[in-house]
Image (cartoon, rainbow, N blue to C red; front, side, top):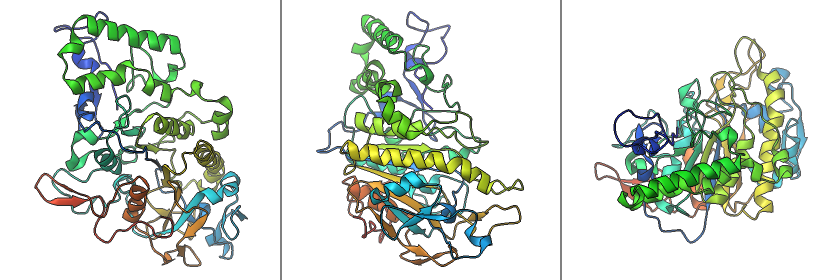
Amino acid sequence: MLTIFGRPIRNGRSFCDGISRRNFLTIGGMACGGISLASVLRADAAQASSHKAIINIYLPGGPSHIDMWDPKPEAPTEIRGEFRPIQTNVPGIEICEMFPRVAEVMDKFVVVRSLADSDGAHDCYQCMTGRRKGGRQPPGGWPAAGAWVSKMQNAVNSAIPPNLALMYTTGNRTWGEPGDGGFLGVAHSPFNLLGRKARSSAENMVLQGITLERLQDRTRLMKSLDGFHREADGRGVMESMDVYGQQAMGILTTSKLAEALDLSQEDPRIVARYGQSREEFQRDGAPPMIENFCIARRLVEAGARYVSLNYSRWDWHGSDGMNFPKSREEFPLLDSGLAALVRDLAERGLDRDVSVVVWGEFGRTPKINGSNSRDHWPQANAALLAGGGMRTGQVVGSTNRYAEHPVERPVKFQEVFATLYKCAGIDAKNIRVFDQAGVPQYLVDPGMEPIREVT
């Protein structure tokens, strides 16, 4: 979580409002402890020739592949479930009837129906790194995908960290961790903008008393920023900082990041396309904040190279039999959000530069259990891809007639990441970085190639 300032200190230097210089510059790193904002910016600030970016939408809990993207209408009732498939705007591709808006723009998506190596744990680690959590770890650990992108591509500008996260802290901790910099270091760890609360973020992103909920108050926000800058400059604080500290101050005292987070500056008609969220957390998962899809796009436009986010909660297989009732509640909002995002990117000419992936940690049992729900099923999983200049409007891979396991073109998580890296202009096959033990490491394991059908 991000804390732009903490509590006033009793001893030591502080600004006129009682905020200490040390507290003002503190950021809580994700899984790597406290780090300074300046350290996030110690990477080379050279801009890349083009601004490629990735948006990683993680659905905590394991969404049902068979109910969403891989329907089996010819299967018995206890397999096919309660939903019918519908035709999309791409002949031959059918998806769940609860996704009519996605169906209208299926030509802008790739459906991967054959993810074959899900770890099976309730954990976002594989969706953030591409690797199994219990596998071999280099000294310092594996970097998350956003850290690799940050390392390889650097910042687009000094006001927006390249690796951003909109990951809520969840009751099930492992659903809210976007990973860290691993052996690449904390400078490339995600700069997370969210915490436990959906709207009011007083405990995670606070700026002179202004929370994310109140970013619409532009006058007060800019007065707060300007006031701090004058106070800091008057005390010689700015002159005493090294270049990275000054870059960090640039983030805090310019409006670019705040503006990207401020949906009041977005065309209301565009925001309305995404749908209206429900602000409550979904038990131990994240809140269904569909507006964050739009914010992710705004962050990319502002200069972010990688944005990861967690959305709602998709684990519905208890004794209450909520799989299908919850699907009817959750699917339509996800439908509107995904369709709005890909339309948005295309209309802005960003669909060749910005890649999108949507997935969860595993699929769901093809056979419905005694509670009219589906249990965990790592044997088969699915993902949606969009943008990035990919050849969209197609399905990659297939499962058997009951969606039990891939039978054609099995795809691994690392192959998906290799695809995203290639779309972002990164040669994952040949670039190597030495870990803390001096061993050369690659972004993906040998043999993990981009999905040839789409790149």
